Image 1 (cartoon, rainbow, N blue to C red):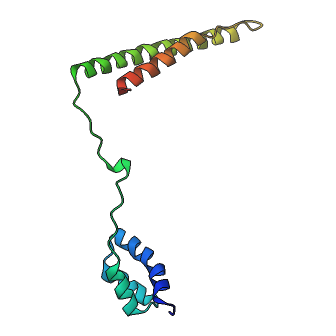
Image 2 (cartoon, rainbow, N blue to C red):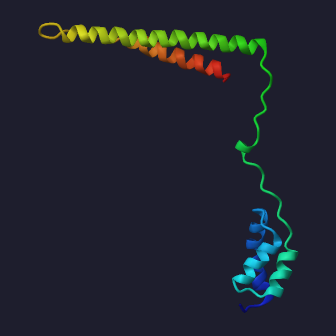
Length: 139
């Protein structure tokens, strides 16, 4: 391929840096560029002179999480969170059960009837459960 040395360097250098960063050897990069039709002398000079780029910083998920040891206070908080989740689930399910029974009774009443929606118990139970879950997870 023709062109002056500056244009070839500008064209090839980013590719060489990317390939070096990915772990490819300089010889493999050289062979690949020569096979693509670039001048071997110029490619050899560019590949040899291109400094190896610094490795990319690790992604947050690649770093191990540092957890401090659990204390007795942490264990008490987790136990409290479990109790809140259990009581919240009981309130929510109890509210759903009362609502379902009253709807069933209303549906089986001659001429229809009214039913009771225990929304307070359902809502309170759901909020209590989520609060317990947040305590259990330590947030």
